[in-house]
Amino acid sequence: MRGMATTQRDVRPAAPPEADLDRAVEVLRLLADRTRLAVLQMLSGTEMSVTAIAEALDRPVPAVSQHLAKLRAGHLVTSRREGTSVYYAQATEHVGALVTNVLHHTEHTLYPLPPHHALEE
Image (cartoon, rainbow, N blue to C red; front, side):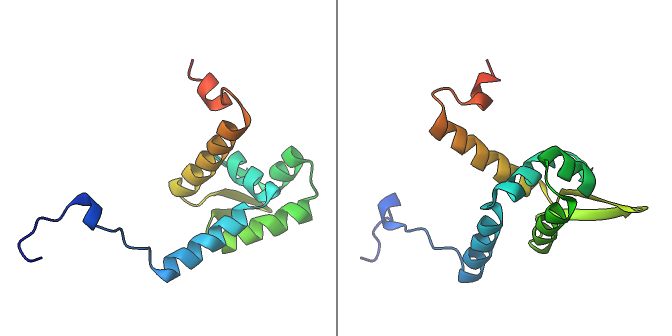
C-alpha cells in the first residue's frame, strides 16, 4: 500500500476524547430542562436578576435560584452581585449559539416555515 494516494474515503474522523464527550453530555443534561433552557434563552445578549427571571417565568424565586445554581456550576452562566441583587448572564457566546441552535432545530421539526425563517422574509 506504500505510495498509494489517500482518498477521502480512507480518512476516518477520530472520535472526540472521552473527557470531552462526558462533559458534553453533562451540558446537554443541564439543557434538557424546560426552565433552564428558557432561562438561557432569556439571557441571550443581556443579564437579568433572579427576581426578573422568576417574574418572567412566573416561577418562585427559590426554584429559579436552584436552576441558576446548576447552570453556574455547569459553567453555562456567570453571576455578579450588585447590592442585594444577583445578575446572571450567559457564560460565553458558545452557550448562546448552542441554545439558539437547539431551539431553531426544534422549530424545523414543528413548523412548515420555522418562525426564525419567517423573520428573515
